[in-house]
Image (cartoon, rainbow, N blue to C red):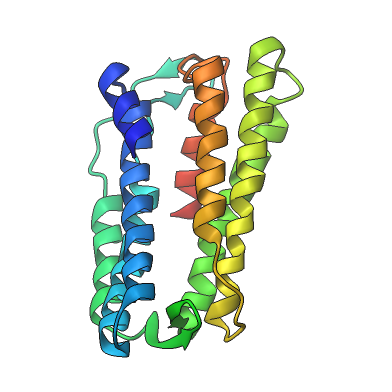
Length: 223
């Protein structure tokens, strides 16, 4: 969150604003997990578990900075009604106010953990796998034509992405397996790798860099 604030304050753009909104949603999700673990009873834990689940749809509402024209030139986005925040809000209400996504919690040695309903077992993996596949497609497409610092930047972001994938261990406790959900540590390490890449090579802003296309494809495919 601190790094996202620094980026948006020092180099404000639609890219940095998208990074900031992504960081806010992810941070709120993880904070809700903390309160779920520390809850004194199952009723309180269930409330916090649903709050955390309600934060997830907003991860994909980060606006893209530009759209790419068929000629390869960057074009400003067209004015249109963006329904993504409304859809995210509807999904958040569904997760928060009903049992269709999370219907119960289990208690493990580290605290309470949500038990996913069938809808969550379908939507959660689909959500994250679609983001991963979209990012990898754009990385593999951009890497061969890159060189120098751009290639190093892509390589570091790929490493950060791989580290973040270890957060998938959080799905195991939801199925009743008593393995500590260290997904927060994977996200923290992934964020550290991304911070290092941005500090060393800067924030991608130009047509020759793939970050804009990665963000755009991830958002469009996930919705």
